[in-house]
Structures are given as C-alpha cells and as structure tokens.
Picture 1 (cartoon, rainbow, N blue to C red):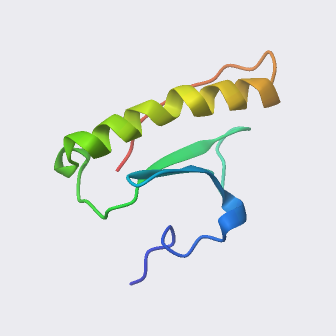
Picture 2: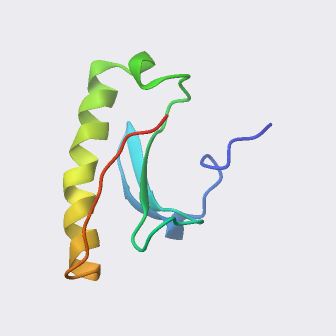
Picture 3: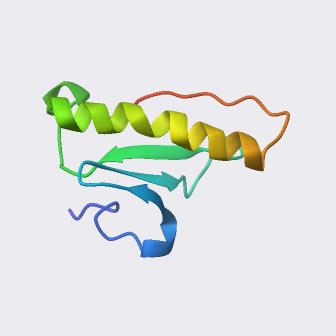
Length: 82
C-alpha cells in the first residue's frame, strides 16, 4: 500500500522541512482542519527522534496563526495524531 502523504502535489503542502510537513486536510472535520505529519514513516509518535518531535511541535504554533487569520473569530484546536 502506498502512502498518500508521500505523493502529495506541491500545492497541497503549506509548510515543510526535513522532518515534517503541514497540509490542509482533504476531508476536513471543521474549517481550517490542518495536518502536521512526520516525513519519516513511524508507527507511533513515540518512535520519532528528538529532532522530529521538535519540528512537529513547532508547526502547530505557525499553522494556528495562519488558520486563525483565515477564520477570524473561530476557535482553533490542536491535536496530535500518528
């Protein structure tokens, strides 16, 4: 089975670095629903390296600011899934 995140068109990626990428969800449960995804395939968040975790935790702050700017007056929630 191929990974749907490894073949994303460049236009779907909002932010990317060596360890993580950020995309708007293709099937959002709420407006602005955004995914922060590790680049390396891991079974669990706990399998990420310290550098990967640092990158993953940096992204929500950056992404939340852009989401709040696009959706003024709307709440912004952050959760981590692997």
